[in-house]
Length: 112
Length: 50
Image (cartoon, rainbow over the protein chains, first blue to last red):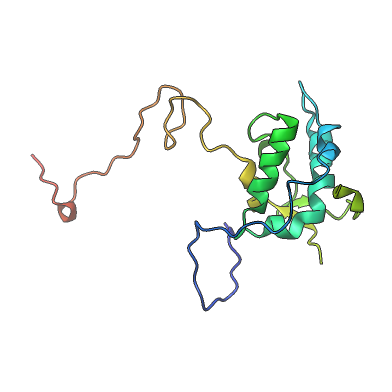
């Protein structure tokens, strides 16, 4: 259960404390997700693909669990999309490491 | 460089620990007992049997 990277560190930090997200998730183009992932069925392949298109450009900051970028991003996604609670975490599963971003082209359209 | 994955750690931020109203965070089932833990009786905790 490799929740935290095993890299050696000479300092310690409270695990509960998260640094503020430097990426501005308040101003992103959430229509990438909301225009494709729609109810009532919320099809998994459509929703997960749309989510990856939006989130993969920010994969590095999202994967850093020392900040609150992932929580912030999901708050805005649920705000704009009115999605059922936990829809992406429950539905989107791929390989061992997570959702594969290699097939998502880097796109500047993620930022409005 | 951008990593090639969105890790499950990041996805976990989208989970809801316990979305059932009235259910306990520790035992998130409808109508279940709130504290499912049973400590048992051991001398180190000064538990007196009988």
